[in-house]
Image (cartoon, rainbow, N blue to C red; front, top):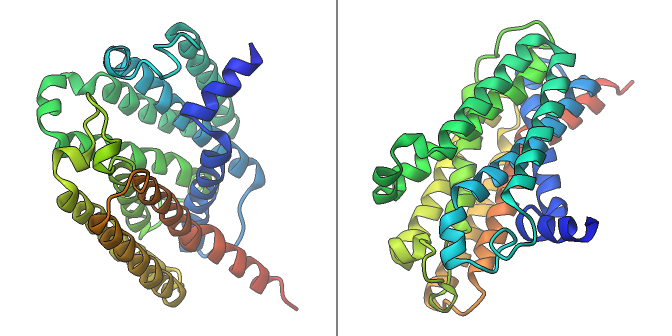
Length: 306
């Protein structure tokens, strides 16, 4: 019993890969909010709730995808855990419900209004799961499909940042929009990056962006999303006095991304698409750390120096 769930998480929600990224996301969301308010520390209890809720929320996103894609998976991707019978949709549904109870309890423990923000995020997740009741139309418009689904990132960001400003009895700080923009665009970077593949790695029935748009356009979209993220990250860093290190980091990462894209375009060998997916994850992790966790840590230690 335990072994099959361990296999499931390895294949569909690898905790050791997703965990650090989600931790960076939750701490940086709170950290950026705190820095905008002139604070240099977080409330440990609120930070714990933000992380656990975020981790379970992204698990719920995965479970929602299992339900949404069940028919296509059964037809085209029989190797996945649900169609091959490793786990059932019913079992996943109970896990998603249990996760929701934990999230709700933690949110209510902080403040009732925090729970209301959780309900808003759940509501958007539910609409996503139903493809906003326009499944056929969205299927024919993959760009709008992606853009509409990525809204879930800033929606949950509001919950995560509220674990700071709401718990402090303050209003959402001015400038928070730049972090929401980074989060939204990071979602696009990861989404496009994980769906760029070598011709030999394309699967029948799987609509990757390299298949839908062609390799050149998919790579340009990936680089374009990174460039827009960089603008938001730089603007956000300016507000917390961290623009210089973030600018240097952005220059380094954008150069690396461009080199990776050029190399992949010239020689799309089997398996090389995984490098783009890996770089997308590294990019996202560093974006979050550089905007929230790292500057907050620096401010905290500077404030405690004698």
